[in-house]
Length: 249
Image 1 (cartoon, rainbow, N blue to C red):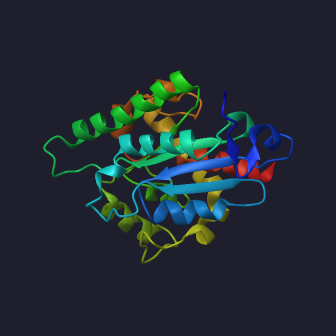
Image 2 (cartoon, rainbow, N blue to C red; image 1 turned 180 degrees about the horizontal axis):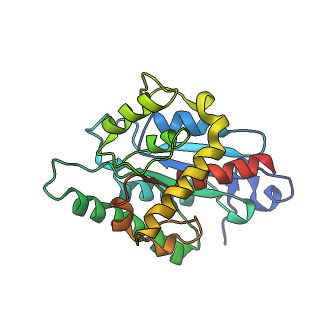
């Protein structure tokens, strides 16, 4: 006999008899930056639930549980066991990943490409089997490029977080920036500008022949190596744009 799945005390049948707000499930490798930012989006019309892949990870010595492949595994675990994700209701699942090249590795681009390709392949296989999409929110070199694009448009290459942090402090209102600092209140009014700059930046890379996540619907066409060699880059704007759409409709 089929088991009726309950979510929050409600069966699926009862759940669809009332007006519900979409759930945006976000799996993050970071414990501070992404968590602080996206928790601010919980409003009347949308439930943004951000989960940390491994709360015990720290700095550059992150546990293996936060590598891209395991982020996707964690997303699948939540979908299968803890959340009733239904895209017809507006629900979405995202994994947030920093390219964050390890220059101690003799072949940092090749190594990171292999790691992220494994994660990407899992999302494609899962969608084929379960008809559910796990989207990858990729930032190169790190999530803070999204913050910077609120203030300026740039195609300058950033080697790592430290180099981006220096530019962030120099060209924005975010002086003395730290990862545990909640900056939402300082940048949210500039979200439209950030979205425009992200789109412009992706077009810049596409015009160079890169095959990127141009929009959240064509993820199956992603070239992972092109994303890793596109610096700076982020598609986090697509996630933010969708949440804003839900809250404003």
